[in-house]
Length: 173
Image (cartoon, rainbow, N blue to C red; front, side, top):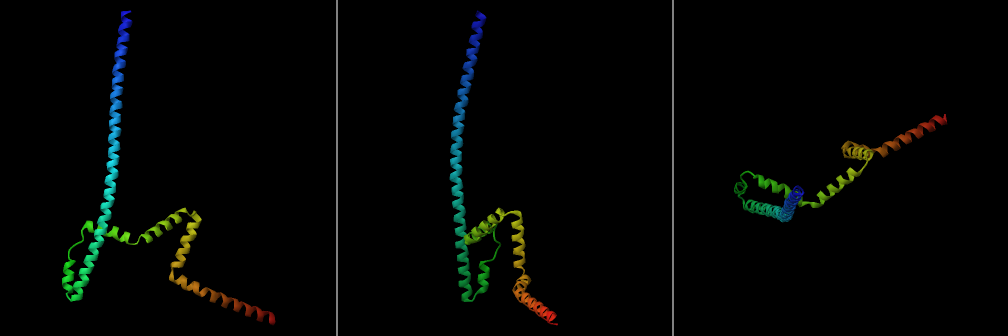
């Protein structure tokens, strides 16, 4: 019986250890989940700030381009073209070229939207339709084919008239 009592006591102490360990893990899990939530919130704020900064940089690049063009036109109109070239001397930095590309893409958002829509519709086409569309575009783009398509009705009617005359003379004799 003493052995049984000792076994029950060992099991209850083991159960207490396991329960306390479980409670510590639950607490750590809650803390970790709260930390993850805070980090996700911080990432969202930083992402929004980054996008805003990129937009500001693109606007600033546009203003810089305007001021540079204005200064060049002003100096050139006064007759000192050499001075205008000196203002623009130097190499474009990587940062400038990066924002130049973004700026130029943002100048015409309708063209970008149109291209995106066209590409999306092209991807939705079936294989045969894509081949037909591609070959049609190819034929219409070629300048020689355009000239040929303009002359086709004339050639067709000339051939038809010749065939008609030949048939007429063949039957009349």
